[in-house]
Image (cartoon, rainbow, N blue to C red; front, side, top):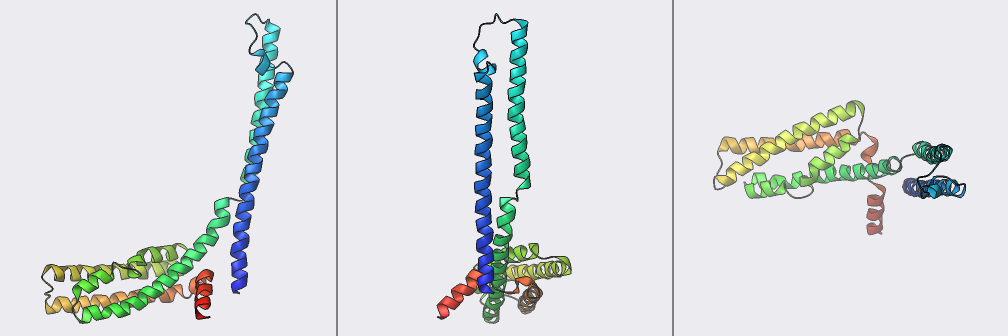
Length: 241
């Protein structure tokens, strides 16, 4: 399974490189075709050469030059139009590469949420010991400091009811987390002193934040993003060996 996923990523990137090279070759071909069109016109007495003649042209000469100019411009525009049609028919480079990148990043973010769930369990000691500096700082260092980015990235990759439920659970988690931060800040500003009811509220909000983030994780683990990214798993296995 790992080899299949790794091969899939490799193939998608190779296709992106091939598309880039193809587009560059098309641009070069159109450029050379335009140059040849102008040179052909010049060799046959058209605009490029006749532009330097004196202003004593007859009406016939002027008409001929106009026809040659129109012919040259039409040839160039036709080549550009053909180039545009071919370009639009090719798959987008961003479209070929971005799904692979986003899939990997989303799975990395799932791992980040898992790490945040485990970290909050450890940070519970700060609440129990009334270490409000510890509480406040713990919310500002990884993995918890990355939780907003991780959850938003995951939600962006979800669909249907699970997307809606996960977004709701995440929003509720953020409300609880901000309340924890606000109460800890208030205690710090009051020389680490806090009323019993405020301490009880801080404890309750922290437990609430843990439960709500755990709900987010459980919802995500029902999706295809439940497994860790290929590169993370391979690195873990390499370390264990």
